[in-house]
Image (cartoon, rainbow, N blue to C red; front, side):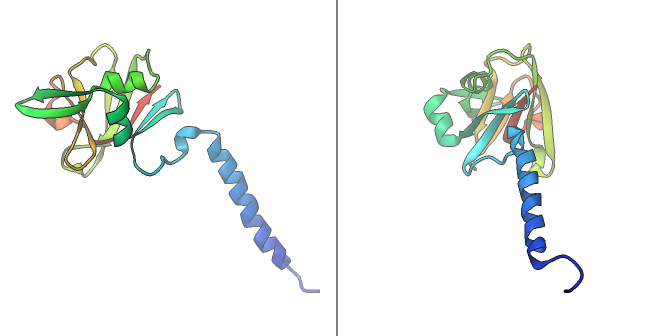
Length: 151
């Protein structure tokens, strides 16, 4: 009889490890990857409350046209998306996406006291979302918005 683990042991341990790791990840729904086509994830208190595709946004949330710094912006208002996601009462949050030039990830802190009907998630020509507002300097706008976290 040879020394060392039996051949079936080499198969069993990786399976056990995958089950344990998979079980740990399933407890936190915010850690799960969004489905294909999802452009925006809303996370509240650590749980995913909504995953939005562009088609879902167009069908379920009213779109608005605003002009900011002379440029037209078209898409849903930030407040409307939060409300449609079931986030009615909130104090602060973070919008996560890409910064100017799209070479680094940014997070823009937001508060319910400052967000109003002038904050829009503009649908870009590339089919991504851009958070724009007259109250935020253009170089601080969040491009390629992928997630909004509400603690």
